[in-house]
Length: 290
Ligand code: SF4
Image 1 (tube, rainbow, N blue to C red):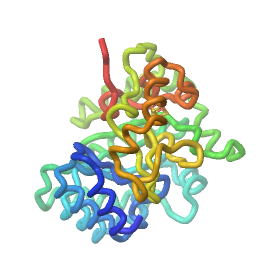
Image 2 (tube, rainbow, N blue to C red):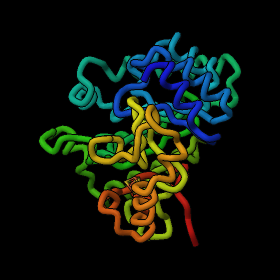
Image 3 (cartoon, protein in one colour):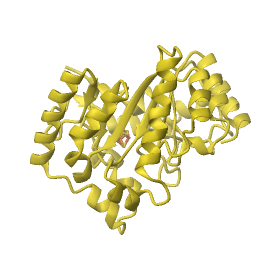
């Protein structure tokens, strides 16, 4: 999305509490990201982004912090160099950790009290094996949080065996590792959030269709960032319509009605449906309705 398009989108949105600048790709590939952050902040929203930190040079980090960003999620799917190479060929885990270290250093030396830095993990055997090290890494760097989420399998092709393996988490190992990580994190003074794989509490219902939306780089509006493909689902395009028209459209309203009645096919297999994708505190739209 160009800066001009982004400003148009901002103009069309009603007042929003939060904007997370993230798509299916890497946000730092967009050189106007700091300008987008600054513009979104001046609209009154709290603004965050998620990056794999491969392009997060000192200059890029300083530009984001200076623009007033409130949250940076630093995706680090593993700290095992060999697994990392398999997953992200072309960059090394050392370079990514160096970039994160530089970011944390700049935040520490200058004053950015309103910026949270978090290591963002996807639950996988490799992450669980190194979870203690990752918690220590986050704490040593002075980060605020380590949060883990489950893999959204709808994002990857079913023939990708590396990514298939990522999903192959032993629930017992998951429970043990996350319990121990929580204790370590508490001792080290860093927040650790992980989803509860056993959550059966249906009152943790996804609230995305009612309180948020996903806007793609080319303007399509979908209900959430877990369904970002406009070819599969969209309710209209912001470059062609007003937000209110899209938000109140019959297709959006029908979708919400199906979600409310718990019969929307797209949501049935979604781990976020009842809070098994994120820890409820990591999901801005999670709501306990009891
Ligand atoms: S349940 Fe999942 S797919 Fe459905 S709206 Fe929520 S996040 Fe999106």
